Length: 103
Image (tube, rainbow, N blue to C red; front, side):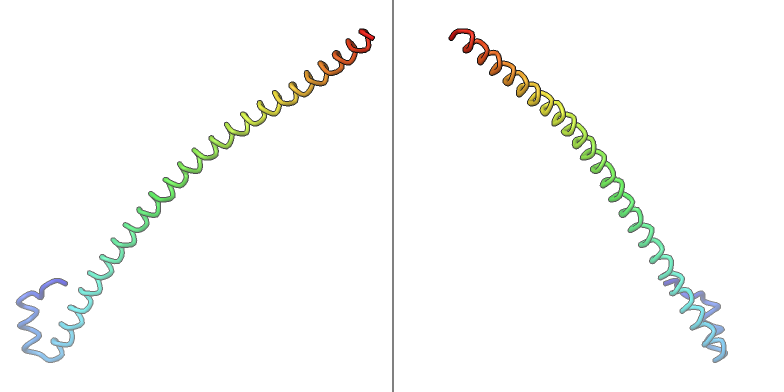
């Protein structure tokens, strides 16, 4: 809260109506100071929220990239598994053919 100027105090002491005006001025200055402080708090909180959002966006991007890499690895592993099943089936068929030929 700002301190009253000397001339304001003297005027308020001389005239009762001026005293009411002076009190309103002091109250208005106090409200302006509170408003300024509230705006600063709001700006600070908004900046904190913005920083949190940016952090979450970076984390989301990292996790999305990791998911995509894992998906690609899963597809490669699935292709290898399918190929190994095909090879096993071919080998079993070849073995069966060899067994029949040996009889």
